[in-house]
Image (tube, rainbow, N blue to C red; front, side):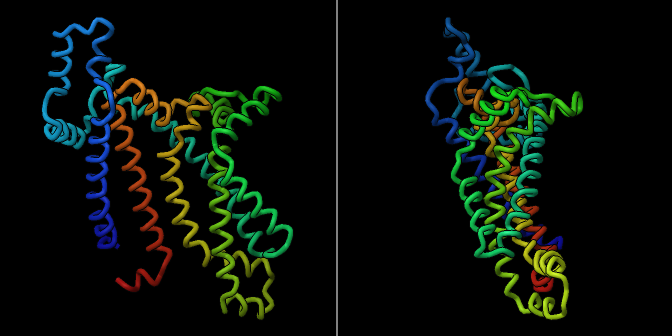
Length: 315
């Protein structure tokens, strides 16, 4: 087990290094000078020179990258050029918001996608199967931003059931927090539910044709027991690993949804940072999301290892 994790880490660490190089290089290719943004409207030459020296903007790129990586390994992601706050503090404030949104969205996706996939596989070729596939394809086709806007117009503006935007911490007001997050979580969760439904259906169709399932039915077991205990348990392997990967995507890809619902998470933070050319914040957020996605990939590999006896026996 430990050797398996060590091999995966040996792949993950170089990947994270390459991501850091890619992010740093692309950031430097963006047009504009952050020193000009910080200097304000007057843009005094002495102020510009001071800013460039303070943030090492006048040094070669390779040195800037070295300073940045060295500081980042020590927990120092730099100072925000826009707010003059440590980037690590901004990340610590915004990360719980995005994690809460991701957990709620993933819960909705699992509650909708897996039962729909099982039902579609069991009722293959029936109207239930066609309806489930139609809903899944619709969930994959409808853009998140359009669905979010439609929900705001219907649920918030027309019906007045839920707030259209904003955020409240669950530690301050759990009910208000749920009300502000349920719509964006539903928007993200429906798209993931469609993906989970298709994969669950495919996995279940393959398992339902297996010999041990036919044997279980021949023994006279109830169909529900055959489907849940025998078929679904064996089809669970790709679903668990896919869920871990989808959760990693949620941490990295909720930018548009957070913008639409004005949720102060990673998405809004990185959009504001890009518009103001706040390099340190952009780099810090992207590195954190990349690390989170790599971590979820590692968790998916470990879960696959634990659930698949053939992999354990091959070591």
